[in-house]
Image 1 (tube, rainbow, N blue to C red):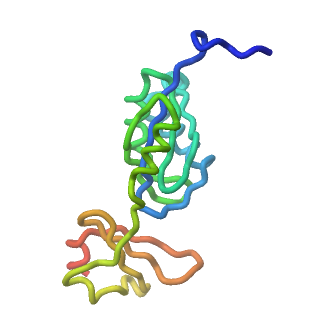
Image 2: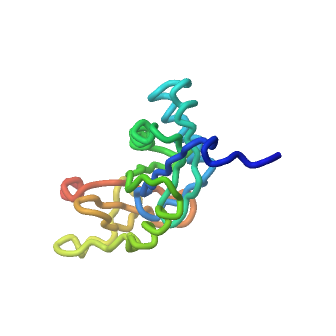
Image 3: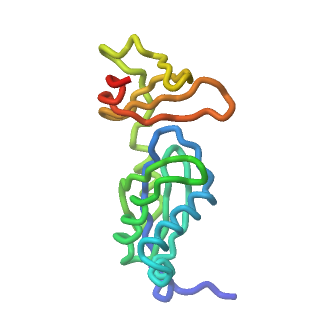
Length: 169
């Protein structure tokens, strides 16, 4: 079987999305199903078939998703509607779109790694918090968002709060 010449190949585009919250571990196949379900529920079966979303890579807190050229906007909207992957709550934030995977990988390399930092300031004394009888570690990510991670190693939960929510507790 011979390779198709470039003029007969299907044109594709690649979208780079950041996975939030930082440090979320996701399976590439499960994420593919979540993105396909989001595109199908939002645009319908026929448009999802035109978009043909595919997860090319999921690494370092970023995801590279492939689609047909001209359908980047629809796929970007579908990515913004993804809220879970299996039982893991997450959000996909679009960073860039490109015609090559290599340029997106360079962009990942230029972006400093996003690490969750302990809270600073007046809330610094509250590195541990008890909510509903469960003990949580407190971490701050971007801006006003506060993440609470349950202590332990089995069946741990995350709570996502803001500073205002923390004042109410």
